[in-house]
Image (cartoon, rainbow, N blue to C red; front, side, top):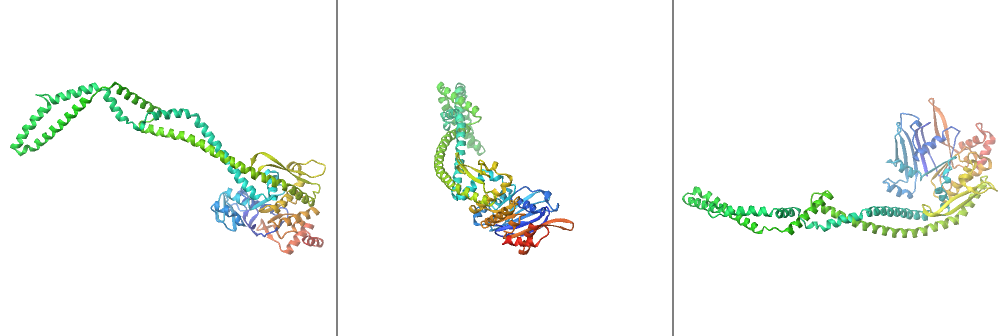
Length: 549
């Protein structure tokens, strides 16, 4: 329920604050007094675009704040968006003089989308020319599903349907990925096989290069080793024999003088190291063997590795191993994708079976209550001077599942006897629209959890008995929801449980607008003025009392 409105610096409004109650809240005022300004301010709370030109004072910010009494049903909305839940919730919109807009819920800054989402569940503003949403399939389903008490069933269906749609999209994405991967699968298999056959984990490229160099230069290596051994081991002039003699001489000198002991030890060490070198060279010389088969195998391995390095743009075997492992994972992912598709298709079939059950139940409920809707509409039309009008629900079967089940819906309308039923958007005339919409809103008020409903001069163009019936309908509607009505009709104003008047006045040579709550006596005079005009007559007072009852 909307319990308070505060407006500051908006159009002709300098500052305005009004408390609202339950039931039928009626707002009256002369044409041009500023009723539409208050609605325009409320539309800012609904998330509509702000215009800095609407400011009363161009150098100050504009503020519109509303206070709502809300139920626990909204707690999940607040928790999902990390907002503080309060039964008395404040929604505020501030627009700076430069046109910058800020939105708040319980003093926490929020985006305009969050503001719209919440306010749309709290306020429904309907002006006399706003009947276009009556023509939408979503609105028409809403009317019938409200009457059929399909709220929980429809919620369960829609959750399932949205999951069903998401699964279908996932399957399509997986199939696309699989098709793209399959296009390159053969080539990747070839690359993977090529790398696996190389047995990369067992290869040491540096060692293979050394072996190849040895095989390719075995003759020259053998020659150099033989020459080296010859120099080391010549009987008279060999390096070893010469060093042996030198070592012995210095050893004798060290016996004569300790000054030569260090040299003697160093020569001894050098001689032993040289002997060890000689032994190792002999061993290598003995093991040098030219193996044409080994040489060819080594050449083949190196050439294949170099080719793979070039193909995969890497410099070592480690890089090839990484690519091999990636290709292996890629091939495994194909199997994973195929398994995922299979599992999701199973899930899709299961969801479709559940959709059949829920959508069938929805269709049955709608078919059962569509006649009730038609009868209720006809009864209300009769009260509103549309005695011959007929409303018909054309409920068809959709070829595919949609957000509303497996139905299509079209509301047909006939205003006068002898004319064919046509879709309501083409059958209802301008003079009938407000009354048709009021009838629909009346039915919805009785069967749906409607938010605060604001009707802006929906009764324009009617008078007499029809106006009286409109007032009664609005009074009945206000038993099920908070109904705020802006009207020029005395018959409607008389039914208000609370009455307010929008007043325009001059202050310091500036025109301003405000709204005041009317006392019982002021309400009586206001209704009398609506009947007789600016001059209130005794007859008008008497008639006003009669209307109030």
